[in-house]
Length: 360
Image 1 (cartoon, rainbow, N blue to C red):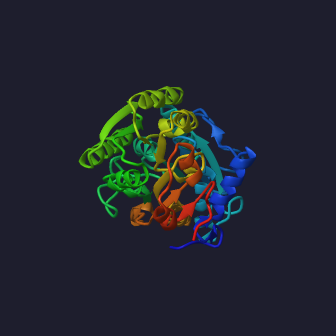
Image 2: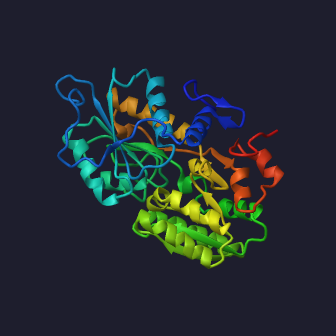
Image 3: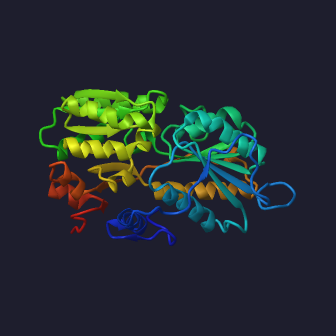
């Protein structure tokens, strides 16, 4: 899949990413904000329930907010549209978020069940993990995650729980994290020490940290890992890594990503290059991101949701594994920390943002 009419691409730079750049420049948000942490007993707005002949409710739940979340959700709605289903006409969409407080995820899942959601859409691994435990009879479609098998959703793409299907990308495009280490070594002159911010309460974040540590050590780097349990800890944890003379920082986990604004502020002060598995954080100053094709994944997830809304059982829909990965770079962000991006890397990148965005 190389693009869709509703999410067009310019050469090397998507219209959606360009729109987000404009939002950043203006200091404004893009798209509507999700509902804030509803209680377990909260009901969907009138007409949202799947019962009584009303439009079926699609309850989209995410573990944490991240820049570009509305872009991913637009891709899901595009997939539904390509399956001839329009929001407000063929279904109602309700979005909620744990806003990085993972302890509230059970209440969000329970609220969707109480509202008689026809489909629960789980974004990010932590959300699916909770849904597997609490929504055993409601159809679930997952997206924007790395390992549905670790969450207990199944054992293979075709052998999975009968009420669950969705889209995933192992390791967010690099299961062993080796390509991320190679990217850092290609950009940062003679790196010696890598810093990793991770969320110890999130199993997948710990797994990524361990894989990145192994890959970095095999490449001859020393690794300093700093745990963050709340958004408020991210800035200080970043400063501690700077004190250990790291040459680059990578981050994993919803808490670490939710605190990215603090991370990048401190990293700029310390002149340390930040790398991320999220392309939208490159718009906020990270140097580069190696990431799956989230647009493709969102569209595929939307089509899966449509199939379920039309009566098909998730049991008959295999998991969809994203295989396409992309590279986004920010020459200006690199320059802010005293790093110059190699011309060959800029030429190879799928998207170039910030200063020096012109390519080829």
